[in-house]
Length: 254
Image: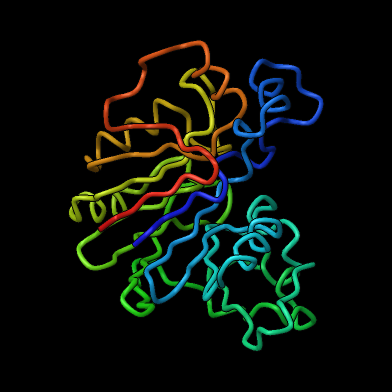
């Protein structure tokens, strides 16, 4: 199983339009520091699964391979941006199946006029779907709207993708702890002193979840320019097995 981080930023991305902070100026000068909204692609050698992939990212994926199924953590704009304008390549006949939580917000996006996607029945919490050996289990999370994280299992590898969360219910924490995760990819939008409410996770919460779940490795994603600016000026604040994501990062899980 290979995981590629198509994006690692929050909905504003980096650089933020009109912002003159050190991070945004750096990203304007050097594209390697840019961040698109957080999204991932999972490749098993048999199928390609995307999670929270917007229009630009999906076009990028299809230029190089295919997308067999698309999962959404929720229907906030950063996860569905431009998908209503997406058209499948002429060579593609089958619409892309789309999976996500139960939320009426999806009805406008995936109307009968958009033939690129085939909206599936809402996912049920903790109910696993198997795609040619890749098992995907929707996980309830605390967020500002109906949302899921996802447990990804392939062969002996166990990965949790919690791309948009304000905390975890005890049931989700207990399940993930029991799997002895090889990798945790988790929302970490703000510095620790930020009052997050339902805006996303901050550094102290992300590190608490990392401590609770005890994964072998954790990658922080959904990064805002505020948090990037914090990391730019403060060194050595993360445990050895925790790192900050970057766009186009690839992880091989054998």
